[in-house]
Image (cartoon, rainbow, N blue to C red; front, side, top):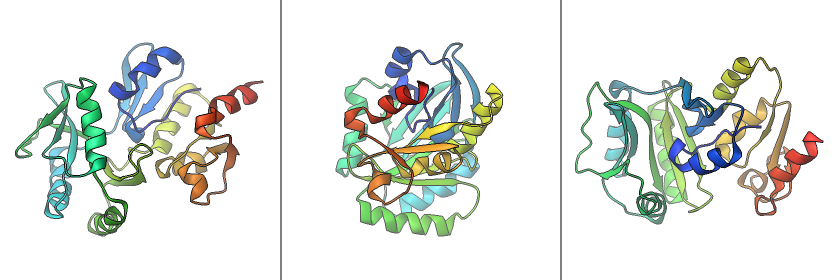
Length: 238
């Protein structure tokens, strides 16, 4: 088995090392496919400045605080301008407290053609974010993937902008072709997993997960807190 996560290599690295994956892993909702054994990036889907600029302007004019994941000169950065709600505080402070050196507070978002953008996200109160998400989908109907999901840890809604082909299902397709496989079983608990689950030969969601509470009809495992996915993996592998 392997993982398809919204996390970055930094926040996933501990359990990547512990689990010793033999299969490529998917990170940042499909932006990267990464080979742990060789430390190679097998696939990446990044945005350039001309693509990112109008999206950032849109969210700034809506009064929101973009959190910008990008690379420049071979280094990775995460830029933010302020912290105004619990969701932002929970995410940014947890990374700063963990010593994540990518994070930096900026006065202005200044970039150029040398920057490559992994993603941009805004975090806020759920009902407010629902309205902003609808406006963003109308303003940018093409050229981007716009993810919206409720963060399990803070119960605040994330809206995330990615390359149009940066999805978990696209990355899974890449991994399947890379391995020469034709079918897979998927586990997921949130909206950003739907495409991957829908394309799977078997699809499972944990009891009491966001997808379960939202009424989706995938097969169920025991809850996450009861190690439902791990127990189902052991059962299937028997």
